[in-house]
Image (tube, rainbow over all chains, first blue to last red; front, top):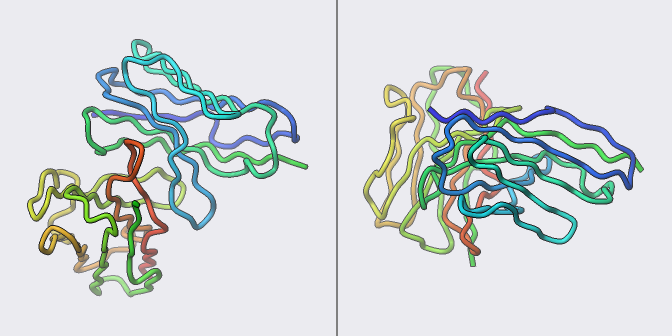
Amino acid sequence: KQEVTQIPAALSVPEGENLVLNCSFTDSAIYNLQWFRQDPGKGLTSLLLIQSSQREQTSGRLNASLDKSSGRSTLYIAASQPGDSATYLCAVSPSNDYKLSFGAGTTVTVRA
Amino acid sequence: EAGVAQSPRYKIIEKRQSVAFWCNPISGHATLYWYQQILGQGPKLLIQFQNNGVVDDSQLPKDRFSAERLKGVDSTLKIQPAKLEDSAVYLCAPPGSGNTIYFGEGSWLTVV
């Protein structure tokens, strides 16, 4: 059974600092990995999707890396802003569908 | 365009009562997922539909949960009898744009 772990569970940084969020998974036989953002009381928004054959994906200030063999992914958020405050979840899929296994998330607070 | 309508948005029931959640995926996609998100955790897959058929319900507590898909569009998720540990957000998720999945705000259940 796939287990996804996210460390740390919570993070508080001053505005402008770079954020580093970690995700690890136990079964390296994944098809893809996604990072989601969730605001309180809201649904999940997909941020980045990395196929298993890829090493990283970038979107604006966000960069996600994937090391499939070691079962790790890292989400970098450059020059953090208060608007980046949210919970960030990573999820892996074993096949080309959306049967996702999620981590518990990292709750980020960016202080102005 | 992806999207989903769910109702009711909020429900409070006593344990051992029953509840039903309804989902209408705006995109009309053939595939549909129900996830359960307990507070402080990532979403957990309950059931996957392909048109009217169940593809995967291995994580659905079948002694109390049931789900169906009507004419390959609308879906309902029922819990009977509810337990305290069923308190969660129930997310109906169709595939979205950009090779990802769409999570709406879900239906919030509190069992007291």
